[in-house]
Amino acid sequence: MSKKSVSQKQNNMNSTESRAPWPNQNPESAQTLGDISSDTSSVSSQRKQRFIKNNQYFTICIYAGVMVLIAAIIFKCVIDFDKTKAWFGQIIGMLSPFILGALLAYVLNPMVHMFYRGIGKLCDRLKLRLGHGLHTGLAILITYIIVIGFVVLTLLYVFPEIAKNLVDFVNYLPTAYNTVLDMLARLQKRFPNLEISMIRDYLDDAMPELASYLQNFATNMVPALYTISMSIVDWVVNLFVTLIVSIYMLYDKRRIMHASWRLIYAFLPKKYIPACQEILSECNRLFSSFVVGKFIDSLIIGILCFILMTILQLPYTLLISIAIGVTNMIPYFGPFIGAIPGILIMLFISPLQAFIFTIMILCLQQFDGLILGPKIIGNSTGMKPLWIIFAITIGGHLAGLIGMFLGVPVVAILSYLFDLYLAHRLSKKKISDAMVESVLQKMELDD
Image (cartoon, rainbow, N blue to C red; front, top):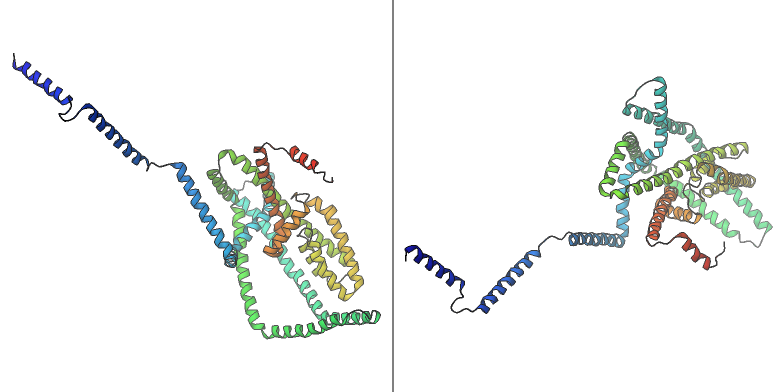
């Protein structure tokens, strides 16, 4: 036997011994050790899987945290409502030049666009070429020359007349007081059972209070003038910032719109972009048609009121006409808000003139509501009178006269968006308007 064959046998024996179980180990124990090792590997793999990132659960956690944070902020705002209101007032006060500048740019944008097109047509006829910046700058310059010129003419010619009317009215107050006392005395003689003495006592108590108030006002004139002067300085600064912001927004509106639409495309799914365009276009139509149309309508009503009062030779023509034109911007309640002070003023002068003025205002407002308003504004908001009254009430409570005016288009936009949401929800449930009408027919409501 050779050395090679002997070594080969030894190798075969070693391999057999290695494959064979250990002396103290049987095949069942070997299988048990294999199961234990497999269980250990599965436990370790499960421990590793616990730390695998799950995008779905991570997103849910983020949403839950954001909702808890929003709920906490809302709860804090409700608990400390006075502090929240003051804080919002300070923020709105700081941002008011930018808000007013954006609103001014929005109102003047149709006029700028009109002059932009007019300059373009003139350049086409003269075969001139203007750059986009120069073209837009000229349109903005012409618009602001017209607007500022109108304001300057108002300050030079209209405000002195308003001040004169106010001075005349203040000087007429003692005569009006004596007239009221004489009227009460005549009523007391004709109707002895009437308790007119209470009204006379109230007037007698009110006059000394008015005199003391005027005396205190004259004593505190210097601090009041200082406060008024500081307010005027702040007002002038805010006005200057408002004009700068509006000019910048009008000049750079293409870039601003480009940035806005980039944001929309970045955060909104692509399939919703056409619907977003339609919704924004309709909201713009609702707001602009109401604001611009109501401004033109109120301007015409104020001019007509001035012409009619001049023809009828009524007093305080310019003062009352401006009040009628400004308050006419408020739907429904505006004409009454502007007419009531005028009626009260004329009652002191002549009851007949007050009656003539009342009839004139009623005719003028009927003309506005039935003919002029529908021609200029139309049914731009599509809102029912109940919703208009709701918008005026809430807007007036929050922001006074400006809130009463802007409340209507804002509520119209919210109503339009909510109507779209309801239509979407009903379409998902496959509920048509005919089904809703069938329910109403079963209730036997009056047509």
